[in-house]
Length: 329
Image (cartoon, rainbow, N blue to C red; front, side, top):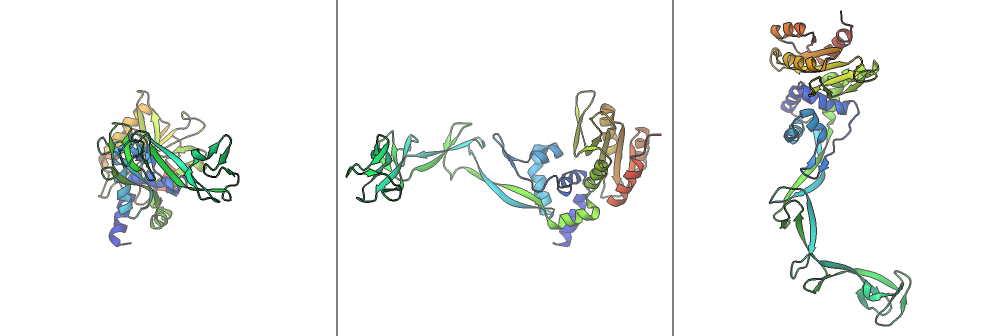
């Protein structure tokens, strides 16, 4: 793996959205991310969409992590979309090669082994048994008296017969037909954590997973990300939510903020305050790497948000265990 790619991974690890997503793998909650079929949109990644809060950006997000060597992809399925309306609601019509009708009857061909007569199975049917139309002998034992000899099709419209129908595609959404040549044929992938990313995560790069584990060890129910409904009725997402017994007891909400520059601005503090004002948790904690501006520090104190500034994930976890778990004074 190139040094450039390793540097790119290091930058992505600082993104709290990436942290929340990768924690699913690190914690063992997720071993492989498989797409889920949606009859309106095709294959989707609901977990990624939930974390991002923007369904349209899910594939771009996964492509970015793959390019950085954090994820590796494997072909899961192929999907066909209608070229007219873009719908994945496609069915296959097997059509007559002569008149293109899909009113085609499929029959099995049967061969009488002894006399060599071949015809469709319905021609051999005689009451509850099979009987050769040519010689009149009863056919009792499969592969001894008779054997399957393929299929034969007949068109109910033009009455012609043939052995191989022509496939055509029908869109159940716009009711138009199209050929494979005109269809939109795309790949759908599964994703797993690369060995490099798993190794780097074990060295403390992924912050969400150890915090989640620490809280669970303390008897908390933990969700990453966590969604809580506020007094206004709006739903708010936190990077981590934790509670004991039920969602109204000992509730802790945690957000992460990182910066590739010198300091994180006060914006994460403002955003978190808007959420906790509506949700009213017992404890709100903002973990910042590497540090926050002085204005952000003052605002966190004013808004009663417990602030952790750390230069590394290891330092942040230690500080969280000591500071954010202390009772309010």
